[in-house]
Length: 282
Image (cartoon, rainbow, N blue to C red; front, side):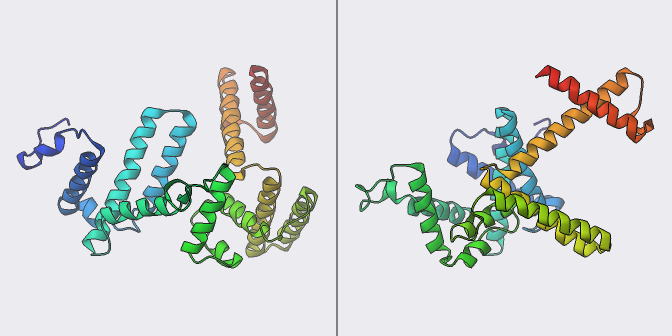
């Protein structure tokens, strides 16, 4: 711990030996913090929103890097948010942690009739696709999203925009609102690109934003036709950019140059050199 704990809290220092007692240990610690720590006392569901999203992305990053030790840490941080939000709700008489966990248990049982239902014991889903189909059908009934519009509204607006766009297009395509093939989707990109150029010429910031959004939405549509996850594709491109830029800076440093002191032409030559050097390493 790095310090001697107050006697009334010494029991918190004992490592739990089961998941159940570990969850109670964390919940009790959060409960104390809500009463004793000025920062924790001020927090609300809204104030914690950004940090919760950040923790989830940090866990995903640990998965991508294959860093299991960091993944364990980040999963702990996510669990802290689950406990903290449940504690906040409990203080307001809205719901408790046990309600959160019980509801999730009931949802898992409800959406897996091919595993748990006695009536379905001879109708077990044989493939992953069948499992997903059952899941979506049950989810639609639970959320009363029988219409396509309702299914679109059911896609969370807080999702990353590429991911949300992909899901929206996929759901709309189920009723035939789609191009016959990727050719139509590709042509749409060119159309939206031209409209963006017109908006730029017009000089309206609002119109440029609208057309840029339409162009990005069209690019996502092409990714769907190609069975490429646009979020992962853009992530890979961003990672590639960082790698190339780092190489460019390394080359500059080896030649006693500073990027900020170079002009556009010099930077472009350096960029091409970085690309060439990295390609040789493959």
